[in-house]
Length: 199
Image 1 (cartoon, rainbow, N blue to C red):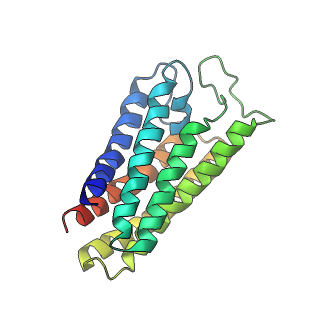
Image 2: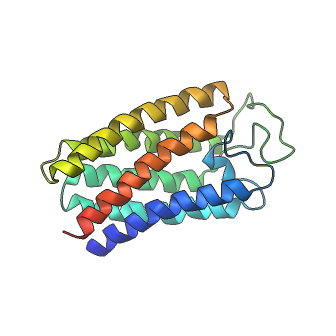
């Protein structure tokens, strides 16, 4: 199980690196405004789709390893990973000027695929503050990990809330808030997975 935790840690960081690098180099894509999920669209969409699928599976498997230490946390981590997989299986609809040539609006009618993507995203973003919150109250970890987890839980709660509000208003900083939330949660996940792996 230690190997699964290591792979999960690597996957969490890889997910960040891929969406950051792809976002900054994708023609017509604005990482400050556009959501990470939009990277699964267009001719380079396979990159983010693969990122969702591969990293999601690895994180879900890592949750099984964490469950050996604290099953509630492991279960939520696995759900988070599976939500990432579902986000890759069901890509969002084109909207808000991406891919290039798409009207700069939110469609009045969304596809069934997009609605499933939204559900998967909602699950993933709900898991992001819940994971560190569970760790913060778990006796399985030392005070350093619990303290860091508590701070991350608060930060993730604020950032996820700000992202949700920005998305609904199509704010120019939507992508920034989403990336901040993802980075906070995924860096924490990489650290907690590493802690479990070296036990």
